[in-house]
Image (cartoon, rainbow, N blue to C red; front, side, top):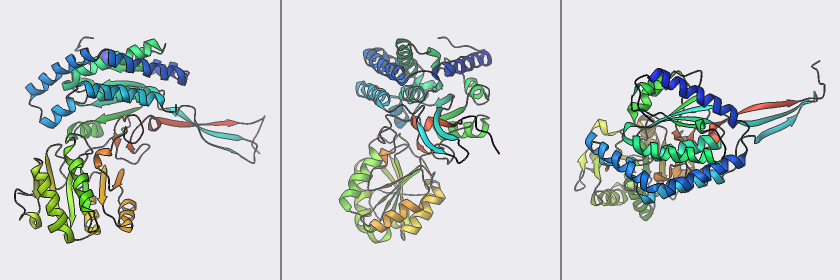
Length: 421
């Protein structure tokens, strides 16, 4: 593949080929899609040396561009992460094929039999930054749901994405499916992104996966429908009835396991009754782990904290930084989350079942957790094999977007010479 300056012609051709591939995928059996994904998984593993070599080029490019440690972590591949990609492809392959599933069936007094049946969405455009594993995850999920996909990876992951894309295409070829079902835009030129946003004749939905700048651009300028989350401003509320051991374990994992993922905790809200006990302990543990804690007034007597400013509330750090403040009660915690959150993932730590139920039923985030690390906000951890992203809107798909969420439906209506009175 070579870069080109004629972006309009390039994208028009990619779109036309994707549209043609969708028509062929409509009759593809579950067995052939399964075979394509298993073959792709085998190709990824057998080509891991080439994939890691390509990733080394991307890492050098990322360092030259001055990417933050968290963003470099998103970009980095090693043998364990390649194995995770392989496992994800296999997990998606093993899932039930959603296409053709009868969602609902009923008979009408008129004599009609009506079925609501899952169908592919069509052509999906995925625009993403840094994380090369999205190439495999998005390509596999779209294929599983019978969709063609146009992948436009970030400039940082250009070589890694290309190496993984070749493996997906090998899987399609081995299974006798159209290689155009999974296409990768072969240029770093940002004009390709602008073109995708207006390809209403060939792209049915856009999924942006990246930072606030990218997602905001897509939401503002797309003429194609969008599944998106703007930010992962993830809160953890430590209730007065929280178990201190669980708090310590969950909060440290939620913040420090991987700071660059969208499920990383960004703000701690601590009930005033436990601010000087559980709160003080967990903040000290975070500081000892290397986390910069930006705290509100009531927590500034803890050694090592940095005074928070207004800008720290509602901020997605994606780094070893967390904001923390004391709240009067669960209502104050939920008010804070509504004001500063992003409807992505929020968590309550408590042994009070009534408080947990209230928090989980009242907050309108896409994912609401109780006594569990927010790092579980991930399609793979939800049993979806992988995810194409986490949608925080309310139309069509919400939360982790897996193969099932990449389908629509149609009605199949059967009569027997039936006419309407």
